[in-house]
Length: 469
Image (cartoon, rainbow, N blue to C red; front, side, top):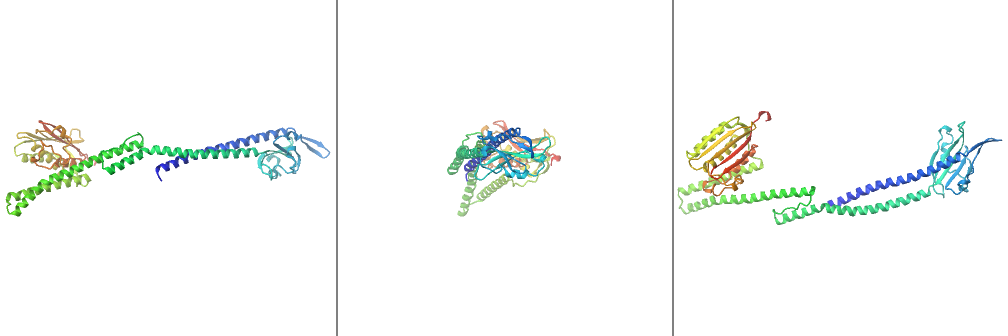
């Protein structure tokens, strides 16, 4: 069952339920009002009659003097006067030849009860071949002595009320049917309109899937939940498009990087087969094989970092001796061509992996040495200015990085054509690995560069705080 159908059913069901409750309330309210009007009329008639009843003395003792009931001849009110033995002593002429009690059941119930316990009561009565009656039974009691001397039953036909009830019920059913049909049609229209953006999103998504057009986006037409869904889907498409392009670029870069060493190896193998190879050919094969091994190892490291499976041995680590070690290694790599300087200050303890951080800093120092002209300077500094973050900076006085390339230096296989030429070695994975390692430590790495002035790589790591570990 579709969502639109379910929404239509729910909407119609709720509306019909509301109308059912409303109709039920109206029905019983009208019926109760009509019954109360009949009861008020019966009470008024009984009160009028009781006020005219008199007790007279005759030879047999006391007797009841009843008023004339002919006033009810043209009335819809029926009256019977009954003695304590249950015999009819008087009745209105509109009762006709009906000789039974208007409500024999009620007389049977209250007969025998003390006069103090007998109170006026109402009851609905149905006689054979007669309309239903509303009967008001009123005990007749001598005020002075409290003696019960009879009953007065006043009744009114409920036929008009029954017709009113039936008419009202049929009206409510007819209106309810119309309400159901209208609510179903309106609910279907509202559901269709509410779900139209979802339908359009579905259509667009299917078209994107069938055409592989990741540059297409879903139109955001509203600012409600569906609109936010469309916006979220567009953001997901943006990320997928970036990842897809990065994957394509990665495959192309890997293919490009692998093609050169494989070509060199194949050429030298051909020379070996022809017996023309020399020691230089064997060295070339070894060099290119080692280059491919390093590339594959670096890609494995990046894959482990992306999946969160990179082995890390985190422990409290003082960066002061590590910086000194990096500076010594830098002097060896520079071989006097570039000056290496280092300075540290403050508490430099972090929660880190010594080998990974050393790899990061050596990579930064090696890049700085490679791209700093002879006579230049590479500076390594480490400080903890706030007590919460250790900042390690590797700065050089080299040729710098063009502004349009600064944002891309941490991308895999990305190299600036002029300032980071292939002749200088490397596959463009070093900075990507460094960024992954730093982020695995909960830190971040940034670059600041000015062409012709120099470049600074800044590594920020959370300081070690024993009370939080």
